[in-house]
Length: 288
Image (cartoon, rainbow, N blue to C red; front, side, top):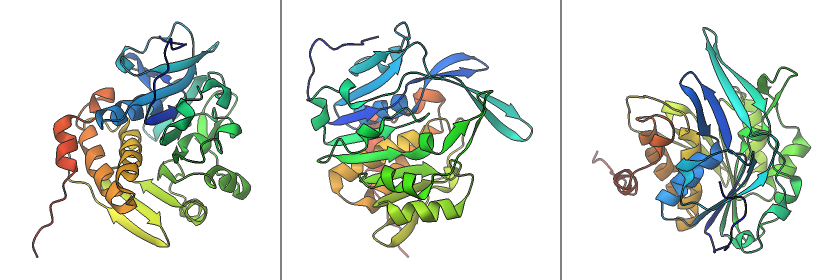
């Protein structure tokens, strides 16, 4: 793992957040928004850089070729998902160090796209307003949860002041309907503050709120194998396409279709392929 880069090169897409070790029945695997989103942005032709924190001996071969600045930490953020007859129960087993602006090289602070991918409140407040010239995208799940003394993760609604502080400097924000446990009042509050808000809804697609309007985007049907990471792939695709086109509707259409392919494969194998990207760039309009 590369903690300190010998040479810092310019990047297009800076993503900040904890990489994770996810405990699964098949053993530990690399996870986290940072992992899925960075690989997606790279597949879309962006020069990507990651800022994270983890144990110095934590290995991330799946991210080979992407420059990583990883602050040494006593722990690597670790999640365990336990599936019960009543649904999934998630535990936060370990938490890495907080992430702050001083960890980011000055050259990387000039990246035109900055993705704040929080998972466990790890992103310092100094980062929220640190990129005034960038397209700043947030994935909100990490700010919509907390955990009890056992580590069991639970929904934590944002207070009005917290939502305003979080979103006032953001260009766009993405969350899933599961992040707010279906609480439409929370979504209403968030999109009243956010410039652009996208709510993903799994196989049902996504809805986007912008400029006083809201629209739904339906994905093509896919035979689902594993939905893990689909939301993070959606977010990265959305932010990249929004940057390229400055059109939120087009960005949502593209991201919805591209993310739908990801459920066909397990884990990080769901990162989009060149053919899937090419197909998603075009919209087929059926004659009526």
